[in-house]
Length: 185
Image 1 (tube, one colour):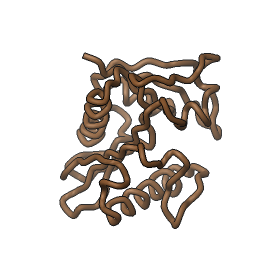
Image 2 (cartoon, one colour):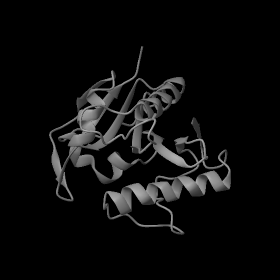
Image 3 (spheres, rainbow, N blue to C red):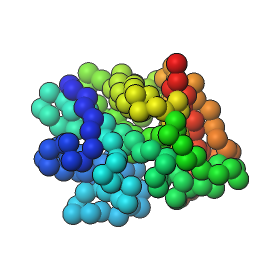
Image 4 (cartoon, helix red, strand yellow):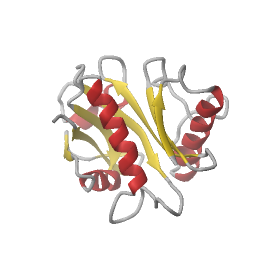
């Protein structure tokens, strides 16, 4: 297994295509999110030149996990689509806050699943650690994410200090929160 990161220009075209297919399989087909497809890939307006992707691949080089990092100084998911999750506060727009989105880890038999009821998988932790390390090296002290309640519970078990930015709100029938992940130090 390997975990790599980069923007769309630094990832090879086949790797970027595999990432888009993995996101389609997880977020649209498995989770049932109503998202648009671009050339049969799950990509949206936040997949831009400055977007950083973290992806994990198994020994067969198949994508088994991912995360998307966006600086909050440019448009991002929470700020543009879900600002109501911030309980009336303005969405962050700072070099020391980056957004983590499209986070998933399905793994393989050796790594477990991110969606386990008790603990995040080693794979999910590795992806989160690589994402946090990248953001930290760019000057970030915190990540912010839009998360279903179940993912919030898993994030709380990662060893990172996490806390809500506002109360849960129903999004497509699911309780959803904005969640801070502290990464400084």
